[in-house]
Length: 285
Image 1 (cartoon, rainbow, N blue to C red):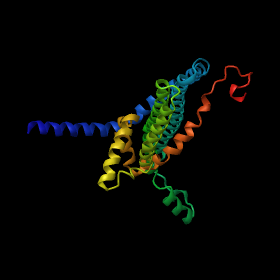
Image 2 (image 1 turned 60 degrees about the vertical axis):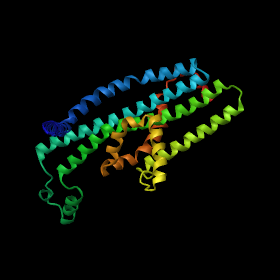
Image 3 (image 1 turned 90 degrees about the vertical axis):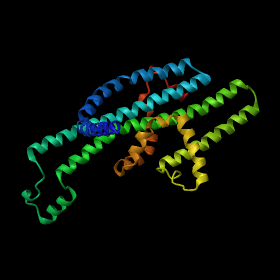
Image 4 (image 1 turned 180 degrees about the horizontal axis):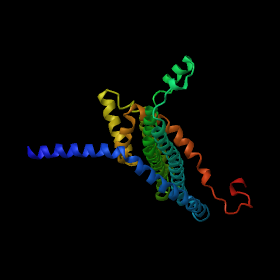
């Protein structure tokens, strides 16, 4: 009984400590974001040089696999850099709003002596200044962890595609010039794509397949879900994901994740580095 009491006291103390820590987390957010922006920006040329080395030194299947790794670096660079910049700007705005509150306190619409129509409109639409600060605080806190979730999504996707390509390359090396091996590899890749598509549909629909009550369907999908989670390493950040989508506020931001990821994946050309700017790009020849 004494051990159970100590366990409850420790849990209560830990919960209170977390609640206190989350109120002061903005200081760590700004500190980490500032150092991270400088560090991430300085790696831009390193990633570009690594890509240049791959293009000129690595060929065939190895070059393809290393190229996918380069693509991961580029996408991760964009995700972290863009979101860190946005986070620092919004967190700076949040600090500024608190400083303004010290001088001006709440919004006094009556003191501005507007017409009743405008006064009522501002009271309803603008609302309390403290509520504005609270909304800004929530947005900043969510954005700080949002970039990690986006990168982990992209990483799982790249791992999945890497494994598919690796299967094809491995079969070609083990059974060269074998049509049966190529056909088997193609069927295996299609099967993996089918399983991955089911889990992806379930993800963007916030668990539509998990909500099916039929025992046979839920049993089959359970093993599919566990298998894809294992091969994509998504089980490592599962607590982060489900804590993100179980809240209506963060769930809205999650809906934006899929188009945002594809936009970022298409914007990797920002990292291109042409060491011979006066020569035509080889891709244009």
